[in-house]
Amino acid sequence: MNSKFGLDRNIKICKVCLMTNQKPYSLNETKNSKSSKKTGLGFNREGICSACSYHQLKEKKINWSAREKELLKMLDQYRKNNGEYDCIVSGSGGKDSSFQAHILKYKYGMNPLTVTYSPILPTEIGLKNFYNWIDIGGFDNYLFRPSGKVSSVLAKEAFINLLHPMQPFKFGIKMFASKMALKFNINLVIYGEPYLEYGSGSKKENSFDKDFYINDEETVYLGGLSIQDIKRKYQWITDSDLKSFMPIKTNDIKGKELNPIFLGYYLKYDPQEIYYYAVENCGFEPDTQRTDGTYGRYTGIDDKFDWLHFYTHFIKFAIGRCRFDASQEIRNGHITREEGIMLLKKYEGEYPKRYLDDCYNFMNIGKEEANKIIDSFRPDHLWEKSQSGQWKLKEKLF
Ligand SMILES: [Zn+2]
Image (cartoon, rainbow, N blue to C red; front, top):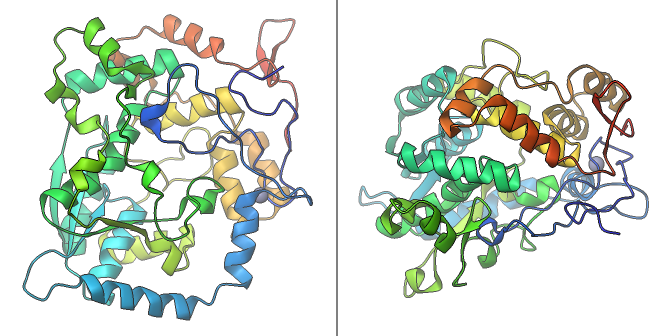
């Protein structure tokens, strides 16, 4: 019998890092309906996850100076020397977008336009980093914020139907850079790390499969509902309200060139080094306190919804923020697997108390109702209720 989300009931844990086969692959989110089934992270015969296999390849087999030459050659094709923008970097001033925009402009002499799809509920530190990115880093920026009235409804539906309140936002943000590129006739769109880095996604190494950003199907899903159902349920919502969440169609790019690339294909990405780079060059600051659910202070700190997002991920897949952070740091050699396990015991699955009320208020959901929804998404192969009525994981998963 299949598990709740179609993932393997037989749990595998990577021998190198701490990822499990319950990690779902990224999919084109506008095709994600209530009943969609997912495939999990792949493992090889030695019990090593595909994120680690990719990492080993990155460490041993890739000639990074050759890759940088490849990057320069590619950038030269798009470089404009007439004062116009020649590439787009999308971000909100986190460590990754800071690094990307800065290195492109100041090391490789490009003219990036930075664009920002606003976090659903920006944090104070996130806003500070956003302004530092633009003002200290030194870039031009377009900031776009979709209607809060509409975002609130979509986040709520996504929470109820998918237990994925950021799903409509994630889709909006993924398309945003390409839409802005089309608007401004910029042909090169820069993304950060290849999805392969985390063991999911594209078959191509240096850019997206078209399938990831183009959806020509008539039925588009947002928050687990079809557009028709959303408009039936919320009659005040118009097509224009939903425009920033809608996918790009083949017709939109007809006769235009759009080249989305992963900078991480060309340059070796180490999140910790990128953090130091962002601090040094763009005034990036870590959070003032540890993030609920993990031990770090500088990843995914710009949106109050990130806290809830990782918690829901932990409920559905038993993979929370700490497992992501620790696995990545084990791979990059900053901590050992044993240290990672210690951290998991301490922080994994911690209740995201800091901004939870803000998120529930924004979605107009009461705490009790929210808890009921959360519990209904716990797969029975991962969770059980103890005699005292507490939910706990059936296995330790390390
Ligand atoms: Zn692994």
